[in-house]
Image (tube, rainbow, N blue to C red; front, side):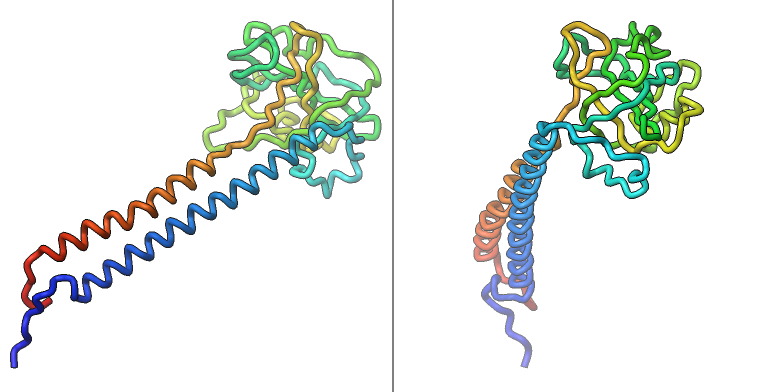
Length: 258
């Protein structure tokens, strides 16, 4: 006996397979939205910890013997103090464009990165602050710094990452593009080794003075709320799409062999 075509267009295997796929898709969207909310909680805790860490009294910077097992990430945004001697002649300028500045100056310019040879050995690069591009030449050799043994306090920062599009150093003008201690040391020349894997941001000085310190930005991308809303929105859209699709299937004529 020949198969009798079904007169119910929504009773076929293809219909139930599509329905299961859409429900699985909705479950995936809900899971992704919930994951983004969990990431939001983690990011908010991270920001709170960093803000608290940067506001703590400065701790002594680790001695050179500890740098082999130095946790650079654990020191990121930590307030530290250190004692050493500046090497202004080995200063390297790092190009930047400062926006949302805290001080008077902004726009294209340079971070003034001056190495400090610590009293206990080793070298740490000190980000003394921002200078406008027109003032760069005046700080190419460091400008005016305290001489002799000095003690400073600042915020430790992890090295900026070198990307595939990071330009090569400009040796002629002593200009770098990233605050990356190994690259800065390579341009600076003969520095006492080792070089610390982090650099130190100095705080702001008197208003209007250069370099303009105190420009450490404590900010992390935090778009998880928007991502969660997007995924939950997709999940809410699925039932509406299914409703109109099922209604269309119910009114569609039966196809032979379904």
